[in-house]
Amino acid sequence: MTVAARSRAPRTPDGSVILAVGDIHGRLDLLDGVLREVGSSGSSATHDGKQLVTVFLGDYVDRGPAARGVIDRLIELKDSGFCETVFLRGNHEQVLLDLLDGEETTARWIEYGGRETLESYGVEPPPPGRDVAALRQLVRDAIPPEHIAFLRATTLYAIYGDYLFVHAGLRPDRLLEEQSDADMLWFRYYDDQTPVWDHTVVHGHSTNPKPVVGRWRIGIDTEAYASGALTVLRLRDDQQELLKISQPAGGGPAQTSSWETSDVSYQARRRPAAPNRAPPPRPAPAVGAPPRRARAGRRWMFSLVLPVGVIGACAAAVLAIAGATGGKPDAVAPRQAAQANALRIVPARTEVARIAEAAPLTTSPGLRGPAGLPAAAPQPEPAAEPEPAPPAADGPPVYRVQIAAVPTAPDAERLWRDVARDLPDPMRDKTMQVEAAQVGAHSVHRVLVAGFADGKAAGAFCRALTEAGRGCLVRKSPAAQAPAAPPAERKVAVRARAPADES
Image (tube, rainbow, N blue to C red; front, side):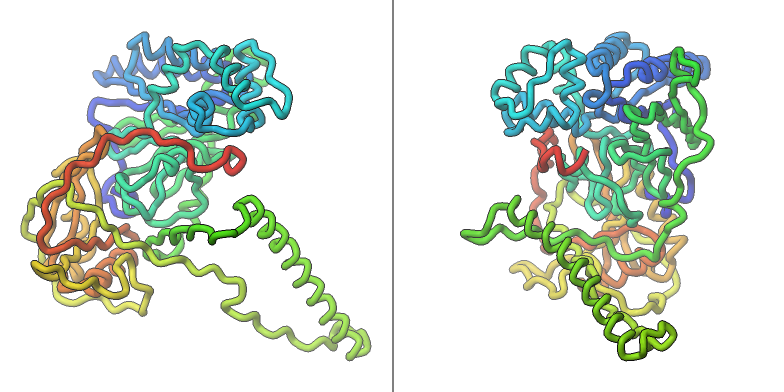
């Protein structure tokens, strides 16, 4: 459940204490400080009858000086059995594996942080322009097979209680099962949009001088390789504690302290809720169109020429006015209001979810409330299509609104009661449907609201939820549809963008 929709703070599973470790990037000295904290927290958890779980968020290699030592330590921790360990994959591990598997077709990994990684294995990095095949063989010879096996065994995400741990993050307008591997490895947070998934996301990848605490996420990548501060998030029941692992001023082993402050700007900059939106699909280039890199160069030139042209035009206008008024600044006519739609980016409409039913539906009576929808100013339609699809042969399409995807059926019942309590008017005559699905190794229960006459009514309900700060997604399916096979086990896909695009 999202923070805005919860009647309680997010919690860890009963009997568990969780340590989440940010991006290490070859800082063995700071990792040793983390391991001392793991030992201390593990002893304390055992004394209290709890189990310690340590989740590493990925990016173990590149940029820092001791990638080999970091992998050695992590393997030792895993083999020790001291605590439950989860090792997530970061985008840097993915790029390295892509290079080894022939998916990476350039030698840019060297400038992307691979130079320091090779040096940590005692190998002189190749000069610029080295053949990719030769670089691939050099990496295969340098990195021990057990280290490669460790990297290949990393996973994309893990769920514990109300928390979801992932390297980069989740797109707020996609359900968990709709997130691509590239999303989980490369996504960056720039906004505070109300999500349609239902966990507090703990992530790295998006760097910040201090940990970031948003309404639905906690970011703990504090750029340890450069700042010298590695962040650990300790979670116990409904308590959250941000720990700073850093070198003391006079040198010596890394020490643990508490972050005195965190970046809460994503909480302070809460904006009016708006329907979740997804970017439109990128059209395929026309036959004979210039390559993507050339188009990017033209866009870069346009982005440079346009501001220069605008500045020049403004300067010419000011000089002309000044000349007409004798050069007196106070004689310049009042500036006209700018056009409201000039250079304005209009968000795209959200795509309608077209996911086959993953399991039979179980239905229970909805909770009732007073009649009538709250009056609201006209807003863009949410996820539903502007025109309903033609009726199926066996009946009209069924519209439902998904409001959650929670771990258990009791969580679904609790969320339903929360929504019915907070939004009694829209919830009148509505019915809850719980849809069980398997997402990789995890079971989820999608909470859907049924009882809409058409897509317009479902859209109005979804608008009422977004105005209340809750995520929602309009879903449309035929009146009768055979359940589809459960989704296949998620596998890690190749990287979808170049290393130079994001780090």
